[in-house]
Length: 195
Image (cartoon, rainbow, N blue to C red; front, side, top):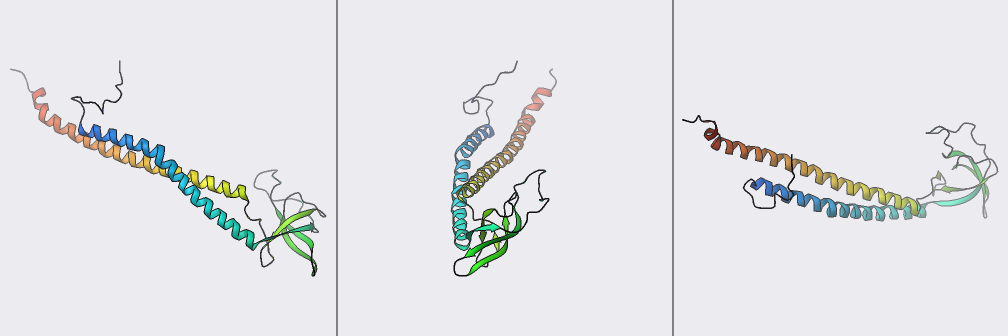
């Protein structure tokens, strides 16, 4: 029956080698890195991503403006979709709105799927008057932040685990070399015939 002795690398015993102690310290360092450094890396990358996404959203809000417009063009009979039956994709059609002091304006713009002629929709335009997507809202900024933070934490954890695997392989080779030297020294005593 096989029994497992916990913490044998930390206690003095005749079977413990220097490589065992080094491996125990490395395992402790890996645990600390996975428990502290990886989440910290995720938090730092998340904070960086939050600041970047927030500044991009602010720039886009400054460069784009929203107009309440009436759909005057027809909707397509068959909307293209990525998934069968998904009717959430936007399509381009003509919209009209009144500009104070300039009269009415009719331009093509992207409207949500399912919009019919005569519906009032919010459409976004850039400074040149081209229809664009709305700027990211707070939910989109937070989604981006969480995604980048999780990727940062996962990347740090993967780096630690790959490094640990490399160190364990080197330690195993070193341990096998130590055992080979020990056997070269003690092997002849075990294999020599008794007189």
